[in-house]
Length: 228
Image (cartoon, rainbow, N blue to C red):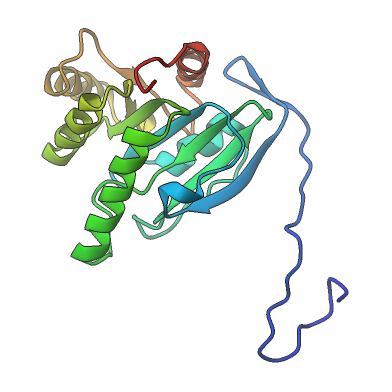
């Protein structure tokens, strides 16, 4: 079947995904040569077969997770940013420079889904964090204006209990004035038991991406002997 030819009624066209080539781009001092969506998964049994290090991103469903991942990879719409919070309902894997995966997890709170679906996704995330040997660390986003909710604290404590390293990152810096910024950073530091203020980023202004990339690359390079 030719690409522009319509499939017969009742038959799905099975066309290969469109490949889009981008020029290399520098993001926070890190050169992005390639970034591509590989697959989405709703089961620990269906993770990518390619054994590459993984860094996962998690946070409340309106914290700006997808926008930050796009900014990190130097793409505008690689990670789909939904108008409705909670659109991500599976683990989405993005391969960067053919060296590692950035993983978009469903938002904590899972807006607009039933309780049973919410529990199912929470169990899946828990299983992924506990059992995925390629997971090197998790970036947990907290809106700096809100300073962290009870569900954020509970989620981070549960992840820490598995032995998975967690980096707390304050998002949406461009949305906060200086007073809100100082108050939010202090709140996040206290609520999550941090020794210093968390890294604060802005996807829009590209602020903090250099330090975040440095943290991600350091985590990828470390030998993960906790999951054995």
